[in-house]
Picture 1 (cartoon, rainbow, N blue to C red):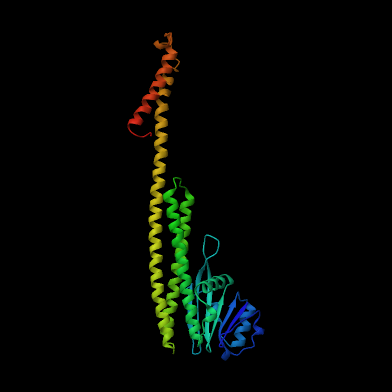
Picture 2: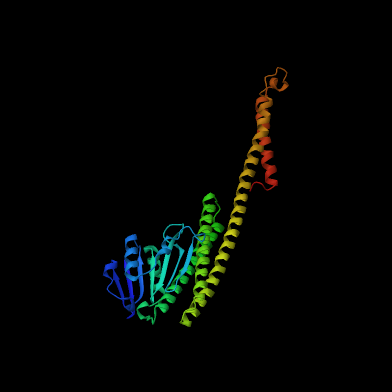
Length: 318
């Protein structure tokens, strides 16, 4: 799908590049969802844009790229996609600015998330843009809000998990696996937001003609710095949660070992008595006792009871 934002502040949705009957002078924004190789070639031809940034995969900066020529600005970065799955998945966003038009290339998943975010926070129908840069700055704000939402999602999951751990008496490896997943998701957000900050700093160096755009980007950088602090706070809470969980697991294991010790000691004394009288020696005086058998049984029971009383006194048994 292709979405056009016109200078008349109208939004047009079309299905193919060939349906674009507008000149660059009429457009603020061209948004292309799930672009194909054919569509990429068609739009590059139609608007004379350089799409080489799509092919930069061997650069050491794998997650983000920034290109500037005399008439075009291009950059790309990866952003985590939140879905119903536990693990986040990184997806690429490509942005090209040329001839006062901003071209966005993104996946349907990211576009859906951005759209839902825009609907919940803004009345888009009442917002009018005076330039492509104003529209671009607005989209930068949406991306910052998206990072904030992702971070908040992780924070809520950590808090809920923490509460569940405090109220639960059973622990297993699943809990540790969940901590690793949350830690991985938080790491993806941190890495992505770091690359996004780098892009914004490079954009500021670009020195846009409209000073308000630079001011807007600076404001977003301040917001992102706050989000980064919260991301680090999430790491700290996850470390604390892992440490507490490991402590609880160790306590549970100690209880198990203590129970096994009690059982072993309680059984070993009667077993010792039974073992002595089970030996096949002829000169065992107690074998001739008339009441030897019940006395031996009594000793075994008594030794068991004495062991139980001992552990009761030591408060190993409640």
